[in-house]
Image (cartoon, rainbow, N blue to C red):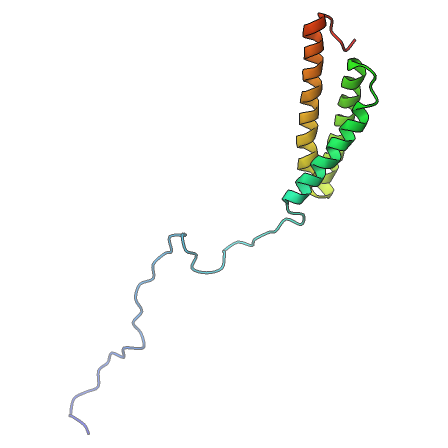
Length: 130
């Protein structure tokens, strides 16, 4: 059946597209525009705990080599320097979580050694490291 009218030049499915809106970023509209890189050795709590435990044992063993406050302080300083060198190597080539644990515990060990030296210095009046 024909009505004698011309067909509409407008086809609802073709040609008309509503204007697109830019997403706000709260809900991503698609894949990221840049590549996403993953760290080969991600920092984990287990790694930090293992590094801290090993560093604490390391500082304890070196601290026991000292027979007095001066010896304890110097051995702890040497052990801490060696531990930080190991942490720097781990940061570059190994597990960063273990390196963070080593650095945190070494800083704590150095703080304890500094407190022991300060208390001895305050009580005796003599600088104990020379």
